[in-house]
Length: 132
Image 1 (cartoon, rainbow, N blue to C red):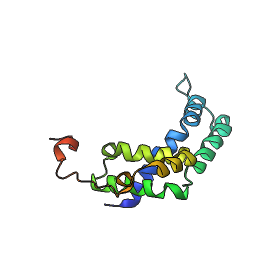
Image 2 (tube, rainbow, N blue to C red):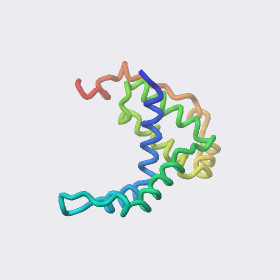
Image 3 (cartoon, rainbow, N blue to C red):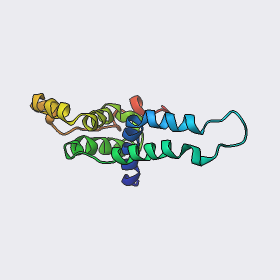
Image 4 (spheres, rainbow, N blue to C red):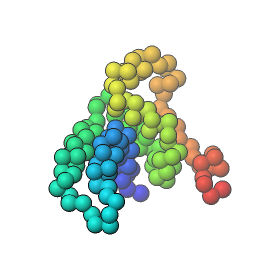
């Protein structure tokens, strides 16, 4: 499996979460009631806002490298199914949204919480496999 595609998937989940309002504005701008598409120049400003938001969302804070690696490992071990890694991906999103709050979370966490995560989807396949 290509882990680069997992990284793109994780970043796109966060970017869409962060840029949701810009996506909706852009889609509202493009929407029309006639079968004739709108002139793309009419939505140029909203498209630039959307691209700027995605560009800003692609920057990863160094503090968030550990939760990003946890999500990447979880997605890899769950054969690319990001829905099995909701808790880990939400932790990455929380870190990206507010680094100070995440830093406080790390200082207050116990040693047990700081241990490396173990992902064992093979033994618990019945809980995660949609075909079983």
